[in-house]
Image 1 (cartoon, rainbow, N blue to C red):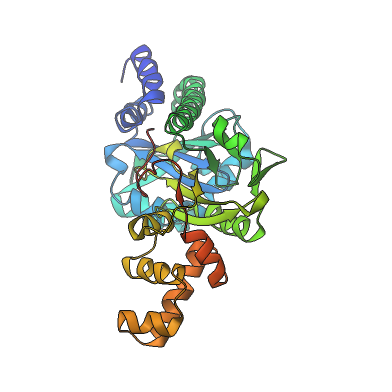
Image 2: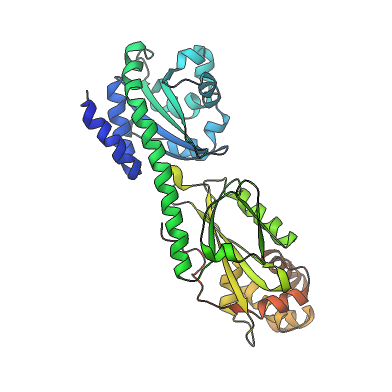
Length: 371
């Protein structure tokens, strides 16, 4: 059995380095004579991160990434106990119910794992961390002695979860300040649209957004705000990786480009998913649009960028089709896509928007901020 004091030290080490969790969950499993364990994190109603010891790794990414835990009865029944300690599977399930649950059917059963004990720890910022310890098929359910040994570790697991969440928030705040140094107004949003961190530049940019109750942000222009809401909703998916960029106008019809960059990293980075960096690119008026910059700003394909440039020149659809030697139906489809990505609904808006460029160097789309 692992040395208790050394194991506690390692638990706090994992709060700062998630790569330690597989080894530590293996050691925690040994405390209860089990095959190993897993740590799973949830923000709002989405399970966003997980780490497993070696015995449980096979199939875990497919199960959690495919929403398996959302289909399971295990989280709900575990939370219903509201216990500051570990709960064994036989306390919340009949054997038949447990065998038919997606946790067993889709993940544990195929790799030879069966009985489980788990504890849920609520973090003050709204996150939830679940620790699971599991035994191989054929081994008995967890008894009182094993649960007592695990309960002795639970206060340390709870504090490690709290520290990990707090350190994550500090890194987010540091990221927004780093972007401020580059002249980029920026904020960190969660999947509920709450602002977790913001730099002074975006706080001063009040002509384009307003601050709402419960630390939320809304854009002044209704169409742009609707696009922001849709982009925020996509943050719930651990697989969300595409940047959403769209135009927004505020007081005086001064355009900016809003970028919402999902913070995904590795799918098992626990507290890393379900967040987005909202970065703002203010625009000024040069003589003509730059095609490469237009493509970068709005996530356009090269073809869409050329069509957008032609619209900004004031060409008609017939003239654009002739210039690019394509059919009118193709041009209409491409123009529709350009309008959707830029948030425009008529050519005059495209002309006004695409005849603008950032007044500071833009970080290339898709480049993650430094955290």
